Image (cartoon, rainbow over the protein chains, first blue to last red):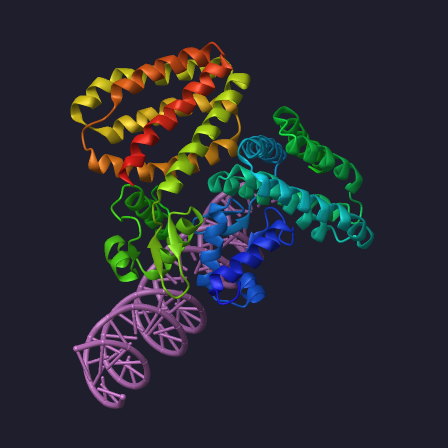
Length: 218
Length: 218
DNA sequence: TGTTAGGTTAATATCGACATTTTAATCCTT
DNA sequence: AAGGATTAAAATGTCGATATTAACCTAACA
């Protein structure tokens, strides 16, 4: 992160601000306000915004500036549905291709997640928990060995996190930890047993079910 | 396309120039040269380049400018392998979800492709043929109904087209039309018969096999 | 009272210029 | 003559300024 140009730094922070919901959906991103917030000129800002347009987090209208992409129920369903399919594809390939090191990393990540769950649950530090959660699932899909596929997966995860954070804002310090924990154990078992069908079904449900809760918000 | 800002126009042309191979892999993209070529200032250029960085067609090194992303055999294999899986996923969902209008569009696109094949074959106009070819396959996958999935598919297609055009440059006016035509007929039959397994296998092979020819170039 | 026209304000898109950093070319030393 | 240090050249990243365009507010008219 350090020693990057301004545009990269702005991109990082602005992306966070959109994903976490600081700038809500549809919000007009005025240059003057952004200049003030990130302490840079218009050109680095335009570069960062251009990149966010490609990531489909920001919309641009010619001569009418930038605004945060709207959130819709249709997109929410589509993103989570697609995520379920992609994640399922990753898991399937990982089971086919994964080696012993891959298995070991899964066990390690599962342990880290489980042992910290209670701690973070007490603190209510959901962001930290989410990071471990992400690391656990990444350990599994990493076994697919395809950079392209993992990139697609990451893009969708980030787009989805915008909706997930929308839920966190309205349900601060609630958390459905316990349900997850059991699902994770089942998933690890199925994956290590190379049980393709079970693993695919489990991971698909693990993504789809929470998304149905989110649909109530929109 | 008209009435867009300079950056968008530059993005379009520069992207074409990279995908078609006018700017070869690894080529240093100097501001002075780009300014000359596209007749714009540095700022629209930087915006366009920033977007191409997100699309993974251009690399940026801080204070050391931009250059066209290198092509590697590893990436080639990965892209085509991933494309095969994604396209297969799209076809599968399309067979599940497609309606009658979808079927009609497939037949229409297949007809257009077939009836123009001989004409374009004589002219050697591969770009025009490729457009029809693309349209045919899009007609099929469109039935999956997922904007997100179709976007992922398009991104991968464009990344792959860089490698495909690399081949076209070295084999101008050759073309493997006939092999394709038969595969297309089989694919239409399987899709319209809602034969999931056959359709998935066919589309997967349709993508993988040509990629093996491309591997010889690198 | 609702609508439209005009003028005012604000924001955007682009350019030119400057400071900083990298790349190269030259020169000096051993 | 070779290697390293110094200097010159070129390219990059950023800012401020300007012209152009859209948004807004007011007022006059139907």
